[in-house]
Length: 376
Ligand SMILES: Cc1cc2nc3c(=O)[nH]c(=O)nc-3n(C[C@H](O)[C@H](O)[C@H](O)COP(=O)(O)O)c2cc1C
Image 1 (cartoon, rainbow, N blue to C red):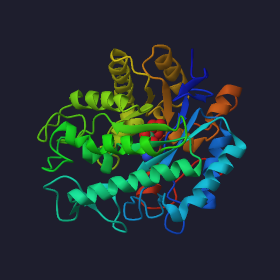
Image 2 (cartoon, rainbow, N blue to C red):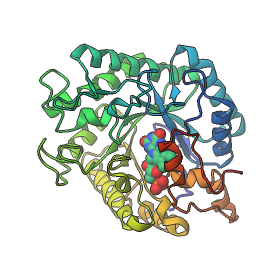
Image 3 (spheres, rainbow, N blue to C red):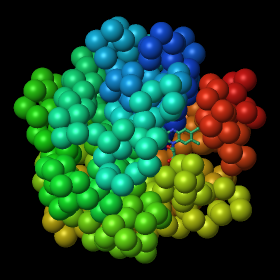
């Protein structure tokens, strides 16, 4: 068994176990519409023969953007998203295409609205009321149903990397309304969103997954046990994963850290290479939790790019040992969108040099991509 064996997510077949992780392109036009540049990026990935492509963070509204040219999935932009899916599927109808749906929350840019769920943050952020959160939940539901209309095979509810969804899950979310305090309240957004979406979807096997940060490495962040704790304790994360399974979700995409705050934990670089081991540990732990409850939910791992040429050997090993079901590549998918196809055909691969060039472009609010190989 290896990355090239077929698999399934929610009864949809995948041609292999290689996942292109969401990577923001920051190249939308006219208030969040996919541009020709955006569509071309996904056409390149379609040629790559990935098992699954998770399209980048797509915001639920124009006021919840982390990137000045970020994508927004609303009624006005629906046709362009349909075009993106059509163009992708014309090239490759076998790769599963998932949209990642998000609200940037505290990570919204100054061109958007900086908001927070957690009490006690500084004045830069507007504190969201109980009703604001209810409205944001409806925005998520609306965008997810639009993803279905656009023809995507599923969605990834973004609850990682410090965005709104992650802030919701943190122990530091000590709100005293129905959205904070107890774990039940902190996961209410997830439960209610998924339950309502499930009752409204028309497509059988429409994939519902989520990306979470197992440990954010900040005080009171995800993967700690109390608002004033910083050490890793995965008790809550285990409960969240079990909850996702009981809600009938199809996969959990396991990540860690907060880009821009604890970046190396999310995406190890040459100087912090060994942090990839945390990601392996997290997927192995997630598989154990799901195994104990006989869950069918699939697990996707992150942060393989730093391993470059050796990534495929570790990926095969983790799959063989059942430490993960799928292996995800972020920066490698920018460096070489054709990675799986080239691997299968033994062709020369453009390996990600882990130079952080793509992240620097993103921080500068420029179109992102690989600064070394993007003339593909
Ligand atoms: C430029 C850039 C954009 C990213 N955009 C997203 C995103 O939209 N959604 C997300 O969940 N993660 C995003 N990430 C994180 C990646 O998906 C991935 O988790 C990270 O790069 C580590 O994996 P890797 O070592 O394979 O690159 C982004 C990372 C980078 C460098």
